[in-house]
Image (cartoon, rainbow, N blue to C red):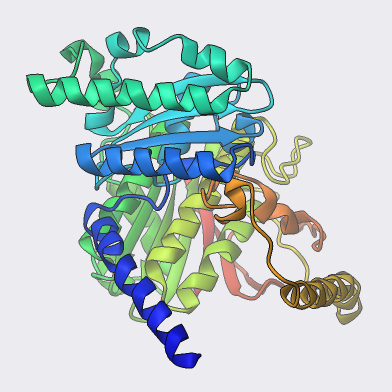
Length: 456
């Protein structure tokens, strides 16, 4: 029995090796059909997924279908599906190759609405304005009447037609140079510098490139510079006793920020020799989006990975939470911003830090969660004792969060339930303090911005 089991496992591993190698080489995502609404039957999903993946690998451009129960929860462009489609692809690092070329059909299962989108130079050239205007109109009709199998099949047929035309003619159907508008031409004063700097060599070339793309994307999306700056020893950059002043010096002397005058932005500065970090955000929009409490929560979100020496993961977390805070500010609801003036976005006054929780408070908060986790664990073990049945839905065979959708809000609900604001007597211009969340830092205010410094 054990021998048969070993042979079966070996066969599975050998069969998986070629597929794994292809994905590692091409940097293609694991799936092409993401049915978050759990609508497609398994057999249908398998067929559509196989065809979309084969087409993506053959033509070197990801072909995606994303079905969501209310797309507005997964994108900054709520109310504009045409912009939401490529935005969801970009935010979730989908696409083919380092340029993340992709075509996408976005479907909202709640409303029956649909939209097409594309990313990367290849994707945008294939799904150009002319090609999009001539796509089979019955795709949207079928989606509206919930005939998703037919709609997705027609969408894949149209993608195949456009790919074939490009292969036969050496250029995309209907493509013209007018479809391309570089960011520098649209707004020459927007971003004058790169967003990610690694002078300590802690990132691979590919990691730095991916972080640069995401930081650049967020900067242009919110018109607010988002930066990462890593050095070996901050003292070599700016001789000072506190890393924050080196961080401030770099931001203000390197031309960082968005816009020709305000130079709005935020920067995470790291010095590797003594494991120092600092955050700096500018006055105005920076203080509005990144309140002192919001900045503290941002640091809590990325410092965990850095303590494990997971630099790339920590920087990804930093960018993810920056996106979250900027999105809240864009909607007029910045994290814990008090319009009465306690957290005035124009001046670095009214900063505060969450107080340390008492043992009794921790017990009250964690006790019920511990009981729930224990109950769920027991139920899972009990369920595993039962005979497995045949699955009928596609999402039963892939993780519910197969698509990461990092703009969803459920991962942040802890931030306002277990801490109480304590106002300082005056603006924070120095003065260290320890917080209850796990790290110690000092708050600072400069002439053009403020932030924190500490250890990781």
